[in-house]
Length: 393
Ligand code: GLA
Image (cartoon, rainbow, N blue to C red; front, side, top):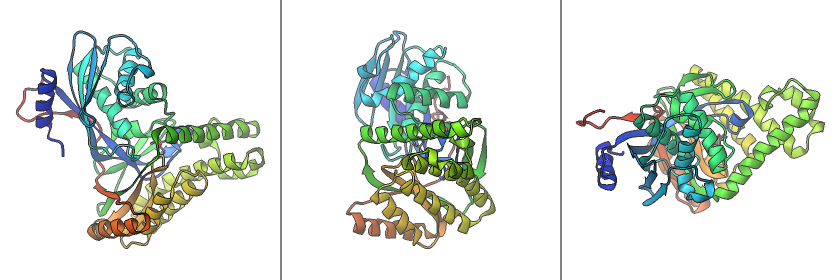
């Protein structure tokens, strides 16, 4: 766990000024993958892994960013820069700062010190965490106010335009709005959401395959899926003029008009349409404490992501099938974009130690990789962190 006082100290030695400190969490998604950019529904929870951002203002307009994880500094002048002028890791904070300025916020230069314990490239939204932490830090240090949902949208736009991933809104939204002990049932069209309590005895256990598909290739697979969904909407619209997104298509509409689609596009659409229905169903199962239904829905979701959306991989399938044989597991599925990364497991608190041990051994036997296993709790969203014993400005 990060000690904010230690972070403040390291900031002072690096930048010779007094910081404010902010933090933003990663997220895990319980249900609804690849639905957000189809105006659909998702059920993420913020987790207790964070990107921390310590910040002070500068009056020369420069934006100087230090990443403690990489031990690298990037310095940007006061004007607009293009993506190519910025090292890949710094595109997230730089994109956010430009986006805030272009949207009219009075953001000037800053020293920003970032350090993150969200596992990178594991599908737990390390990117959204650094974007949201940066946005809160820049707005906070310049005394600017913005609604958290708007911050989420601006950070999503920064990632779309400056980083080049056509991601949806889920990760940034969860990082802003997270609520302790709850998942968020979010309508990605209206951005209305409802907190859904995670039953007390259930822990969110995340198993990391330790497989990372190269960022460029997973980005291009992701963008291809998104384009296939848009193609589906274009074709279906000829028969169903009222639809704006796959969110508006029912399974019976889809079956009726499937001959308009190539088999691949049909399968992508079927995943999105059925996954959307599973989101509300899982929220109800959590509220009703219906463990059998949770397990059934998560199993269906994983199969759909594997067979229809084709974003799983051998290692994810292996973790899911091992978990589902385990006592005390109320559901297991891949989570996030896929192509490697993590599974989410709803595990009875009583069974955690034995679950961790058995999963680690069995996964190693099958894949010769050692998984990382994180027992998480649903956490609060982004906030300023007050350092004990220091003056609050
Ligand atoms: C990534 C994106 C999200 C979402 C998920 C898949 O995490 O950033 O917007 O599309 O993949 O559900």
